[in-house]
Amino acid sequence: MSQTFAASSNALLQPSATMNNAAGLMAEHSLTLPDRVPNLEEAIIVQALEQLYSSSSTANSLEPFAQEVILTLPSGDVCVGLTAFQARFGRASENPRPAQVRLLETPESLPEGTMCLDVVLPTQDTTSQAGAIRNLVVLKRRAEDGKIVSMTEEEGHRRATAPLAARTAAASNFYSCSPTDNMVSPCTSKLNLSKKKHFMKGKPTTLFPAAGANSTRAPSKLNRVASDENAEP
Image 1 (cartoon, rainbow, N blue to C red):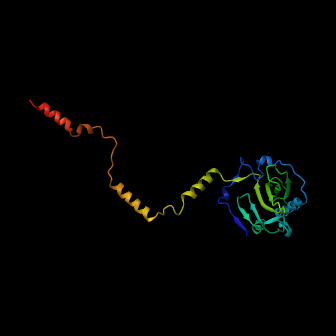
Image 2 (cartoon, one colour):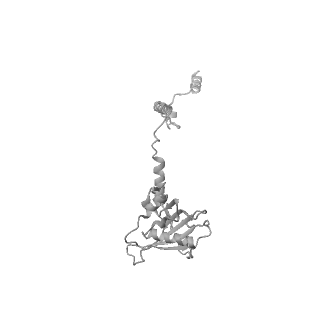
Image 3 (spheres, rainbow, N blue to C red):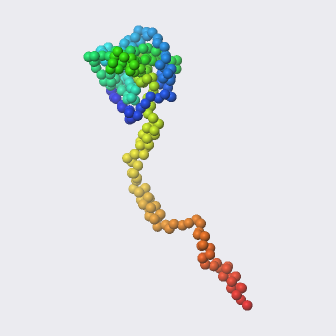
């Protein structure tokens, strides 16, 4: 089964300069990783990636990938399954543009069998390297047969994240726009109506009486008794 999941706000994604990338390193560190010589199996994978990124893939280009491969793109989209993976790279082009794929030293923090690669994607002008795009590709392989089960691609060796304001707005819209917010049970509806009627009948009261209230109020019983005693001869 192959599926493609699109990020909710691709336009808001931007490279992060403060978060580690898929290699577990900052961008400036992974960009300076040294190259290493691939073994026989890794050489086949490197060749397959060169063909896929150059739009010159063949029937053997998908051999190193498992049927349940998961591809995470720089835009945040996720492709699950070999069919969706193949659709992402498309068919072979009549005018392929060669891509440069370099195998990098794998950081010690990553699991065994992980491959880190630097992919230089050419621009429309294949003779100029000024506008070339350098992407980090991290592959995770299955221990049993060495098939690739996960592939993560990050543009500029930077992890793509949405700005804080965009994430806050998305979370606010998600939690405050539920279609069931205004739905209540019949019992709750009757209780709310009863409370509303009760509060409407109540009269407003003040905690502190007005300043002139003491002078205008009626005399108390003790004051009347005292005045009657003073009035007797």
